[in-house]
Structure formats: C-alpha cells, structure tokens
Length: 329
Ligand code: GLV
Image (cartoon, rainbow, N blue to C red):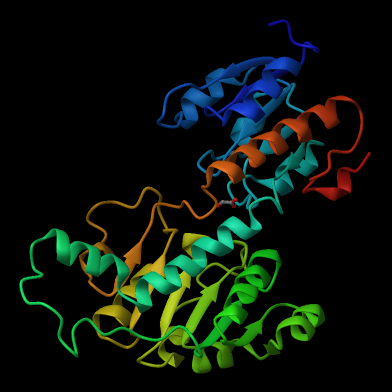
C-alpha cells in the first residue's frame, strides 16, 4: 500500500486493526511487532528518523527519546492518561502530545464497577473455591457471605469523566455518592445527588473508595497510610487510575492488619507487577493487569483516535485531543 503522505510514523505496538490500517494508509509506517514492548534502547534506535510516534502507557517518552528523534513533531498516545510522557519537555520542544479521552470512559467505569462487585461479593474467590474442589458441602446459611453494594456509600476521588461514569452506575445500585475533586461538579450533584466532601471525609465515610485521578506530582501516593487509616474496617479501596496514586506498601499493611476489608486494583506501582509482590499473597484483594479500558469496541475506537490525531496534525490542523494546548495552531 502506498501511503498518502511520506511522513514517518513509528507505532510502538501492534494496534487494533481499524486504527492501524488508517495509519498505514496515511503514513510511511513502521511497527514494533513483538508482543513485549521495546526497551528504551530499542525504541531510540527505531525513532531516529520519524516524524511521529504512536505510543502507549508502557513507553517512557522523555528527553532522551526526544533527543534521539530530531524530526519528531507529535506523540499520539493510545490512552487517556499520559504520565509516561514528559509533556513539559515535549512542549518546550514544540512537540505535540495527544491522547484518547471519552471513548474509554464507560468501558473503564464498567470495569471499576466490576471490581467493586468482585471484591464485595467475593466473585474471584468463589470461582477459585469451586475449581479447587473445595465445594464439598452444599448450601449453608452463612457460607461465603459478602458485603452489599446496593445501598452502600460510594466515595469517588477524582470526579472527572470516569469518576462521574462510575457514579452513574452507582446510582442504579441505589448507592449514596460522595466525592472529592479539585472543584465541585454541579452537574453530577444535580443528576446523581452526589455530595461534595473533603478528601478525608471520603475516606472516613465511604464503604467503597474508588480512585479516578490522573497521576501528577500532587496525586502520587495520595492514598497513603494516613488516608487508609481513616477508612472503616468494613470498607474497600478500588483503584483503576494509576498505580503510584496508591502507596502499595501502605495498602499491604492496611490489608494484612485488616484495617480495611479489602481492595481491588487494576494498576500497580510497577507494571507488570513482580510475581513476588506481597499484595498477591493476600486473600482480601482482587487484582487485574491494567485492562480497565480493554474491550474490543473501545480499543478499536482508541486506535482510530490515535490515527485521527496524527492525520489531523499532518493536515496542518490542531489535533482534536491535544494535551499540550499551549501549542495550538
Ligand atoms: C489507560 O490506562 C489509559 O490511561 O487510558
């Protein structure tokens, strides 16, 4: 296939088809086709001559990468979060950074809710129990009791698009919704009777604390031992945002000492998390490998957005999902 433009794009992982085809049709495209990500060194070798990089959350895109790619004009990230990219450095160099918001909101919120239900109603533990052949006695009145999600209080930390979407689901479960964010969300209050409270109150009062903030210097270790110690012994922590927003060591202490009832997390401080991560030894946690936005439909849409951000940019128009808006054309 002869691409429409000669601009060179390096795609750091095989994207879902719709987006990948669109990139291939439009650009001189090279792809890292292995399943495991390129190392920093390998990435640097590949991008020396490119105009654009299509990246994802496991690529560290920083000054070293920019230094190695003098022609680089845009990094089109397949994710809503972009903490893996040094945006300040990109902006200084006039390099555009784009992301893929909105299309993944509902899918990610579905997953956060799945984690709430899974930990509260012991879904993963029950599955394992049956498969391990432990279900040798039939029904018992007090067997494997869990915690009700319906009617409980949900505490949202970070009521942006995804936090709001989780709250909408909670409304269907007749939950009371409290939240904290840098600013009040009046629409959410009106639509869902959500109540704005300070951060400490979220931790103190919620039965489920669900974290939806981006990873920023201010949010790193936002959930630490002080915050966890405010939580009720019967409450749960859910994290589908970024691993380093929660101090894993503090979470381990809270779980092992039963200071909270449990946790369900899709993200880790280090990804992939090492198999000897002590959290993985605990029964009162459900874990997942950073897949909250991973549905067929959404990942296709995200890949198309990656392509469209690139195509728009090379047409000389500001891409729709520009992160460093200072660079607006
Ligand atoms: C995934 O983690 C994303 O930020 O989209």
